[in-house]
Every structure is written in structure tokens, then in C-alpha cells.
Length: 77
Image 1: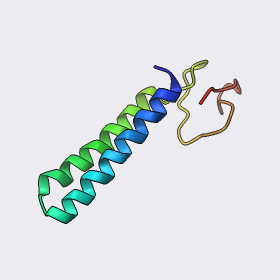
Image 2: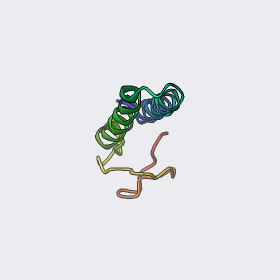
Image 3: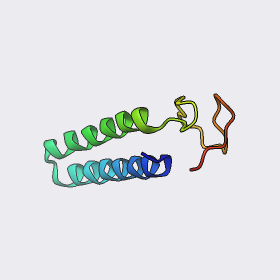
Image 4: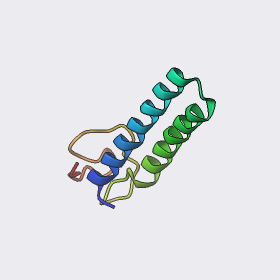
């Protein structure tokens, strides 16, 4: 999977989490809040699996630079 797609999917998971938490707080339905927590955990898991340098496979973490912090190769975001 391309890194740009993985970053977009992480954004989608975060958006789903926020929407679920807001809906939970408005409606007071607990399972929707748990669904929001599940979206957050899935987003983290997704980023840990796919948020890697395409050159060396090192985890990029929160790095948003133009180069990989491990191998110094250019990363296409």
C-alpha cells in the first residue's frame, strides 16, 4: 500500500472516531463510544502496519519530513 493511501486511511479512522465520540456524547448510547475507541485502536494498528518507509521498511512514526529518519531516502507523502 502506498504511504499516501495509508495516511489518508489514518485520517478516515480518526474522523470516524471523532464522529462516534460526539454522537455518543449527544445520544448517551455507550456502544457508540466503544465503537469510537475501536476506531482509534484500528487507526493506530493500521498506521503501525502500513506507516513504514517504502525503501528500508522503518517505522515513520509521527515524522512528516521529506526523508525517512532511518535511511535518509526521500519519502513520497
